[in-house]
Length: 168
Image (tube, rainbow, N blue to C red):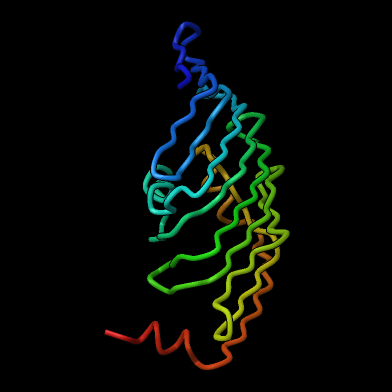
């Protein structure tokens, strides 16, 4: 369902687009242009591999994931709010039983409020902090010199992650 409207090109309207099947749901509503963003994306149980492919993310991921993403503002200074949860899957071929992400971006900085990933009884990882973020390639040179402030906590109860990572 929904429609893509090019009547005000280069502004593209994505009007209530909903795709569902095999217990997966993907919804998008809003508009994008080369200068402005006003989008809302929601997924329920969508295979994370589809998401990593669509957004050309620099890692492999599998398993059902729920995502709530709001993006507004300009391409030069996007305002974003991301919440994601998954109860089973793998990232970089390392399996997990819980993934929770809560992050916001403002003034080209991502603030990771919560990033937890764990495999029950084996390992727990928690990440918080800030790092530069940009959509417009023209900002790369300026942003790559910005400070990264990430706090990372990791507990490996059974050396399970080490075993899984080193298996052939």
